[in-house]
Image (cartoon, rainbow, N blue to C red; front, side, top):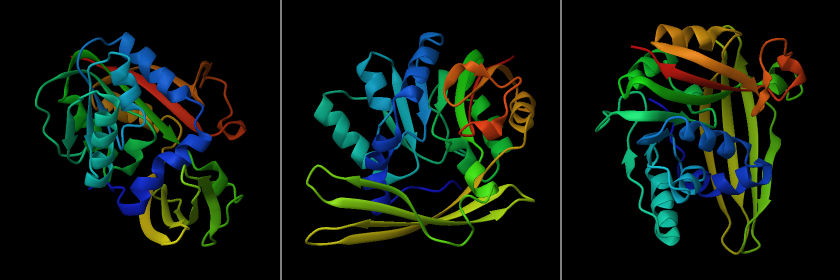
Length: 257
């Protein structure tokens, strides 16, 4: 099973993303939906950080999320914005779709949380008709692999000041299983104020060797239309040195018959 974001981890997720996100992935997702008209599904929609702006822009987008805490936040924000997308609670590797979709969106490294990515991609294929699109983003943990972030040592990962003035902090430590390409992370969340809060979670992220994800997609019945680096469609992977980048790859593919 994938790993849900719960408690303080869910509540602080968007505050930490906001400090680092320049909107690049949102723009890419919107462009992808323009080329795949019809009902679409964001896999791992979380609190609606990406989904709700796309719904506001008129895209018929639904959300699938494993965490009930994240879905509660998404529903509350949708109500505040006056939109009513359809949300589904379920695991991406076993959920049964109510109908076919014209596009699937799996941003923010969602696939890498799957226990079995190959089986998960095969499962996703059943949610799409021939020619329908799949958008997904993955990353390679270059800082961890290169030793810039030593194993088993806590470091400050993100911090943010909330609207009420409270300070939020995320600290992380990790271990690597390079043989199986698994990054094991432990996250420690803290929130100061009159009633301080804290939460610890664990997460395992799988990364892919060069060419591996293309092979997995093709084996699952997808044709890869493009792969590019660091949310830049002009930076195609051919000739790119991943170690000179942030290690982020975006794949755009479509189901073949």
